[in-house]
Image 1 (tube, helix red, strand yellow):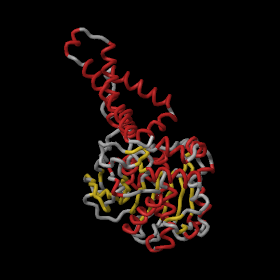
Image 2 (cartoon, rainbow, N blue to C red):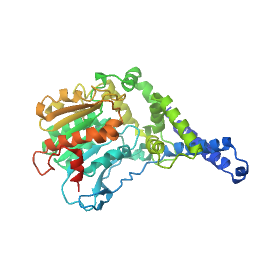
Image 3 (cartoon, helix red, strand yellow):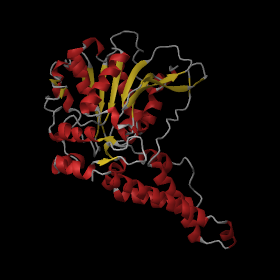
Image 4 (cartoon, helix red, strand yellow):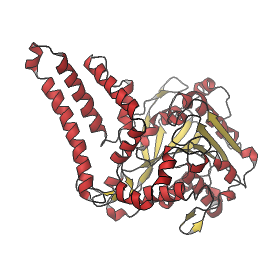
Amino acid sequence: MRYMASYDLMESIRNTNQWLGASALAIASYPAFSMFPNPSLEWMAAWGEVTERTFARMVMKPDWNIPPFVGANGQDRLVSIEKEIEGAFGDLIHFRVQGRTEPKRKVLLVAPMSGHYATLLRSTVISLLPDCDVYVTDWHNARDIPVSAGKFDVEDYTLYLVDYLRHLGPDTNVVAVCQPAPLALAATAYLAEEDPAAQPRSLTLIGGPIDPDANSTDVTDFGRRVTMGQLEHFMIQRVGFKYAGVGRKVYPGLLQLASFISMNNDTHREAFVEQINRVARKAAQEHDRHNKFYDEYLAVMDMPAEFYLSTVERIFKGREIARNVFSVNGRKVDIGKITNVAVKTVEGAKDDISAPGQCIAALDLLTGLPQSKKASHVEPDAGHYGIFAGRSWRENIRPLVLDFIDANSGGSGAPKQVKNAANRNAKSA
């Protein structure tokens, strides 16, 4: 599979389906057909509209679309996006709130590099902005990165986080979502030995595979079933001639999307059939619930092959983080060296990707951290997405995370702890 032809074939299939959808919509919308109304033509147009939109979104990076929010003085606070640090494989971006004068909690949201763009955390960013100064790791699509930029594996990812934390300073509160949780923990441990003054103030790990064997899922079972040779042969392809990263070995986002969908195939099929019916009945809207979800879910990015393979081999198969034997540039990173960074884990009781038990395993590795600086929370009835972007996040988890940050602020000018979430929002600037 490691050929440009297979990558281009996959893109051709996607492009063809997008064209078929557009053609069906155009044919069914032909004005002359309006003289003889036909339900089958209306359904054909609806199928074409949904199909074209679906396959077009697979190669589009979504916009952040961060809306303004109302400040304490009643004025709208506009939000602009600025690049703090630019890199070949990712940027550190800052959501600057115009007109804000009061210092807010500085939060670094570490986005996953697992097939989706950092915009998957859009709703998380929106919910934090009234109370926090938010920075996000914005990873690039590997197909757009020239081969000359070199490799990017789990060690490079960790060092990117180290550079970001050094830049932001010790008053930073890290919130790592899903895949980067073990690497955010490793980056903090790396700084504990190499540059203690640059360690973050707190570290919140949300639904991450610290110890994948603590509670197995389909994801961890897959990692155990296949060999690294099989993964490299069947999952890795070279970027085709259409993109700047031509020749780079990647794990294609379209393959990742196919695996995502296969895990809940019936649910996705029913969702699209229902959406087609709604479009045919003229009951669908541009920004309805279906489009809002799938515009983000279907927008996938390629991962560097080195990152994908090293994640499977070292984090899942070798359990290097769970066994505390992870190394960077040949030097062991000892998680037990973390002694003054408050750490909180968050898990969803119904998470079928990083099941309960996988993330909380981090607390047992922190042998040098006092119990008073450790915390954990399991959100009942919450799945993987809900613990960082859904109702469970907004109503329960977000207030707990902010309270945890405040409780470990060290009295250095951070906002005072507010127990009531509604009061906290009212005090926001």
